[in-house]
Image (cartoon, rainbow, N blue to C red):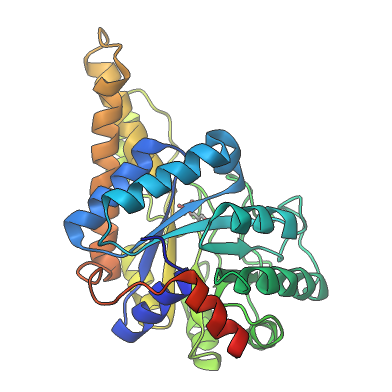
Amino acid sequence: MLVAMRQLLDEAAKGGYGVGAFNVNNMEQIQAIMEAARETCSPVIVQASRGARSYAQDRYLYHLMLAAAELYPDLPTVLHQDHGNSYETCKSAIDMGFTSVMMDGSLMPDGKTPSTFEYNVDVTQKVVAAAHAKGVTVEGEIGVLGGIEDGHGAGGTGLEHVTDPEQAAKFVELTGVDALAIAIGTSHGAYKFSHKPDGAVLKMDRLIEIHNRLPKVHLVMHGSSSVPKELQDIINQYGGKLRPTWGVPVEEIQLGIRNGVRKVNVDTDNRLAMTGAIRKVLFETPEKFDPRDYLKPAREAMKQVVAQRMTQFGQAGHAADYQPIPLAVVAARYAAQ
Ligand code: 13P
């Protein structure tokens, strides 16, 4: 069943675990996530960026997700809009049937120019009103991610706009968001850090400060791929050209989860896994040309990464803990608040 993300995150907070939010663009990626969730008995967050929605087309994406919900009725499943850049983007996701939206008002609609606090509050309030009326969850963002490698980010190292705890508190109070993405030095894509990150570049101390200031707020870590060396090596071994790079170590994410992080965004690790598997097949068996010959191993490689993250984030084993609440009931609860 497709459920509101708020319910999953409330349950995760009760259980003290995190939930991976994995990006999709096509059928194989949705299948990989759902199979990993079945294997590990995990609640699921599938997320689609604006780019994914235009690549796959909304109707294909939505019906693939309906198929997933039908095939895996026992897994509470969220369909989330990743990095909505405007009210219109979020509204179209809500109208289509997404059960959660991110309004990233930390940036202007171009997805790279940092906005003002007032703009962010204003646009996020509008999205919250439209979303909550339908029982749909809203994630907001305060502070700005670095990098621009993979859309959405202000460039730089990500240390220029680290989230201020007082501003975060004010933002949550003014907007009523259900979850809050914060900036602690991460960025999207493979090239996050030029060495294993330490406290100078990955501000876990800031995350803990924000959690202490807002202990009840569900925090979201973006740019949380670990970019494992094994996955980089497979790509490079079979003709790829990745420069040496470091992501966010899983133990830092686990520290975050012990300090209020409930949603962990992962895309790049799955891209690396799929691309490595495809390169391997094409390199080792150049005579093959049936897409299933390389898409099947690619799907399997992504499934393994997702299952591993689900276990590491602690969501494994929690799919059957609770009954999904229908969105209309969630909407009525917001209205009564
Ligand atoms: P990665 O590029 O680290 O996987 O981050 C994905 C993300 O944060 C999507 O919003």
